[in-house]
Length: 534
View 1 (tube, rainbow, N blue to C red):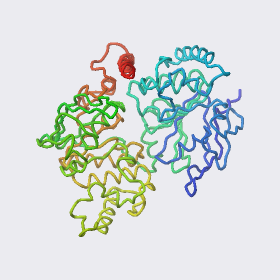
View 2: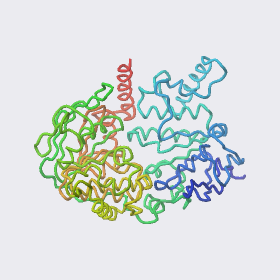
View 3: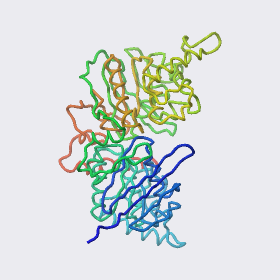
View 4: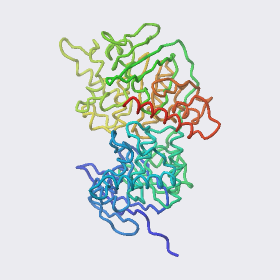
């Protein structure tokens, strides 16, 4: 009996964008009915390769074979016709459409919508039962949790009869229990003969769910191995070309006096929606307080208010002294004058001016410092000199102060922001998503710098959607859900299941299935959102 043809075979794929070789002579075979992981550093070429497979880009050279047949994929419609579906990291859903309308969008049959909706309703019911993809077909997308929205994306692909599914960083916005539920869905799909390509930077997920894993580095395929025959350490080394410490190496914290005291903090956004609902917390010198939670539950607003980018009510004190939350003296400049540094969540829109040079970006926000004044002008020579030193210490590559920020990789952009903020030796560091989209080697370095600052007696408030990062870096963990702090835990006295429940608003461990409890809580939140939107 001959072996089945690969579900996907890419042969000699190359793709360049000007002088940048994104993919170089890549060949890969993905067998049917398997989950195949693809990992690599930021900029390794993973997304480009999948964009070629899904028809977003056309390769400069190479061939695509689907189920043993050479296939031309000039666009996404051709990919769908070939049985390929893709679930993007940022969902492609119309927020004010229902689940049902989103599923049939672009796949309507005939000129009348009603028959298409009736057919889709029946197909969705069957798919939901078969693959544990239950979601209310009449619910508006804007009222669904991110976990349920992701199910809609998978349903869209299955409705179009996809046999091959590409998932790009699918767990980035999920609670641990939701991620476990997603893995059960993927396992069900695999058992039904579907082929899945999983792009992720989380080595734990690769080890847990995949059959085979391919490693990319600098646009080339460096290895393909059976998951059962490798380890996270080996995969990390294959990704970066050197040994990487995957755990945070830190001694126990020695907390001192209270640096940050937040009492009943509230914030209403420009749409009149209350995003912070009485948040209270403390951060002491020499400790890291991690804020865990699924994106969109108030963590971003907490950083914005504390960093002086949004107004709030309540009380915030730094070393016992009140900080203005509105009006005069409440902006970021006033915060920096009080020795509060802020690494924002979105480095490109909030942390850097992308068209400006690295040396200019290393001084933004601190340019009023008298040291940088030379009469009526800025002392640019001093700023450039200090920037070179910061870039060397933070291992920014290339170490060129005159290079525009947009020409650095995401990880090196993040290092520029961290260098600017940490170098000021702040009493309090507010840091949001410190390693989002960052290479595994840079993650190790960034974690070491945050711990070094803690060990120097500084207070650190860390916001991250990466639960592994929260657990390994934090000395205490506060969990947010729907604008409130649901509870506080010590990392050595909790686990991902308990934190995941708190992240979904469940304050006590249920006797039954944790996912059921989370679904009930999220459905209650979705009902509130629906009522709020009329």
